[in-house]
Amino acid sequence: MRVIPPEVPLDDDEFVTRAQTGDREAYDVLVARHTASAYRTAVLLGAGPDAEDVIQEAFVKGYRNLARYRGESSFRSWLLAIVANETRNLHRSRDRRDGLVLRAAAANPDAEVAGDGAVGAVLAAERRALLVDALRRLPVKDREVIVCRFFLDLSEDETVAMLGWPRGTVKSRTSRALAKLRGLLDRQEVHHG
Image (cartoon, rainbow, N blue to C red):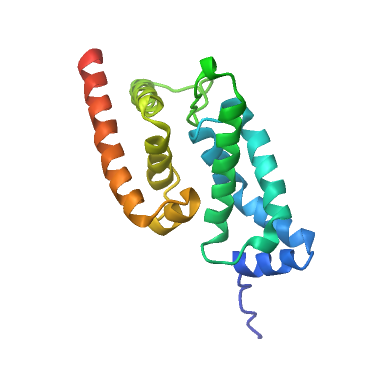
């Protein structure tokens, strides 16, 4: 009996190379792989209900600028940097009085939860609401670094690439932003008992 080795999925670099030579199907694979994290990025950085428009524009710009991608960072962090820039563009175009809208991916509110699970779901929703509120209160750059490092689980290198900041800035801003976030959460805890 002949054993067939399992297929090894191609990594992003191979699809990027193919897409750079005009292979649209290769770019479609990259889009499929990174749509969820691009959407999460847009939402967490404040695109709110416009997140789908933001990521669609980011994917179009990514495709148009694919020749400029040199592989100095991962394709994912390069693409998420475009998403972050498009989200910033959205903020600039919004009416200033509307401010920044930040929506975290929420659990399905219509789901039925029984027994003790209901108490846990309510407590989790309250904690999530407190966290989202505290994130909204952070300055934009602090919120961006927190979202990258902890919500998107980007490495320090990926965060540097995505935000375009020096490594030292990412480190120091992460530390300061976490301290600010803890302070906001502590104050909210006092108010909510």
